[in-house]
Length: 115
Length: 112
Image 1 (cartoon, chains in turn yellow, orange):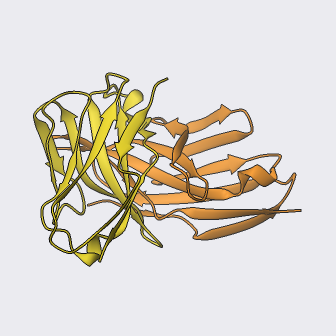
Image 2 (cartoon, rainbow over the protein chains, first blue to last red):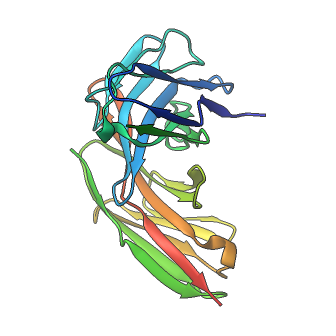
């Protein structure tokens, strides 16, 4: 089954404790992206990657890091989480062709709480 | 940067037709797409327009006017299961590639 898998689905952590949210896709998609979703603010892009070793900042990159060493994986790293990073996080992927680029497939989401 | 505006909430009755509008301001426009998200779930792709006009997919249609920086999602024969949030999103070209920016979403409530 074609899918985007992210883990963990739920996490409660404390301020300053480094954490990584993993994301993996099995569709051979070039494009991958991370979004956070907060009430009333919609989906805001954190980072995106056009292909292996190519990453770029989205609209809210502060406090986050990403890497794209393999095509299928795009982990999100919070080096020193803070309470304002409490949110619902979605990983997504798509092809990069003209039409395919608009068709994102999303993971199920990771709900993160930072105390 | 990019900005998108869509109504925060729309209410309609089962069997009716509803239109959710989206206006955008951006440079390097590459396409307008629509996503549906049920409470607690992940967004799922509904429709996409790169060129002006209407795209129809079953009960859902999407329209784009690039000259007006405007699009809409049309839902026909509304069903209770259509109660969800609907997001418009624009794909724009950037120096390093392209990015997809979402609006804040429209919550659709379908009533009996």
